[in-house]
Length: 226
Image (cartoon, rainbow, N blue to C red; front, top):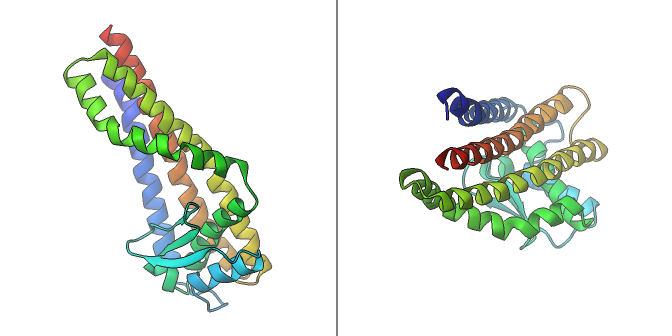
């Protein structure tokens, strides 16, 4: 396999992923310094959105770390990082609303979210064994392990592919709900929320591209090993 092919399948997706992360950090750092006119925190925005949707069994809790915000459907828990949970910024309410979008998906039995939940165990297993599979396949030239690696990346790629509509839909719901409840104002505040959530969406696209690139690379490596 040529070095150019390696750069195309591995290097380009890696650079795309780094660029996407930079866009997220840049947008978040910019808009976390700008307060929303509503003056409420991300946690308060989340609770208001959930209450408006009639969801009373989802707990909103703070977690450590930056941008580790997520919705845990198994425990019905909305986990918000400190800056989002306590922040009164445009970025904070935007991200909190996005995570609420997942709770709304869960409430409405949104198909792609249900499918993603079903393949989480397989995805976790594939992620855990993948490093050992790759090392064994490349360093010991074990074709069988390369085949297993391809299967692992196929699972990861499927997960990332399903994640795309889940995340895009959650962001679309967030943008609408924030306006409807008056948490953000049309104009500059709406632009800020859009910037943060659109940048975050790029990271999911980058993850899918990376998984696809690795899958193709391993398939070509297995072909060459034969």
